[in-house]
Image (cartoon, rainbow, N blue to C red; front, side):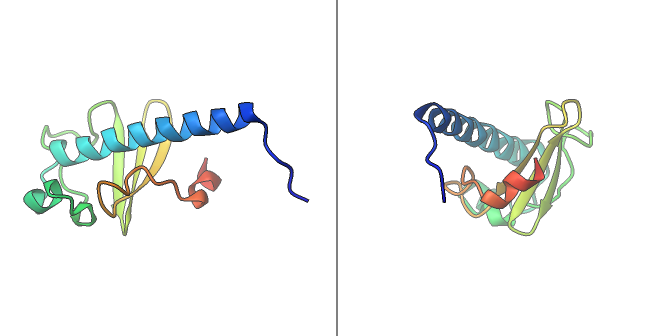
Length: 108
């Protein structure tokens, strides 16, 4: 039997989901602006599926804030090399960036 969650837990989950969306959108923006994307014009128009593992413009291996990234298929994995925080972000379109795939709760 499935138990219902409390209002407090639901509010915590919603806050975490909002935070995930904000961080995911920020990291995608950094990925676009800080890497030498071959299809930059189309990406800026919303074709996020064209994002690639392009070189970081400032010559480092990570984005600003110590974020390592790995574009793979329809997703990009971001990992903060200082804190270990990991986010897996869907790359369909700008509207899809904040969508959370329940599978990614298993990689925490």
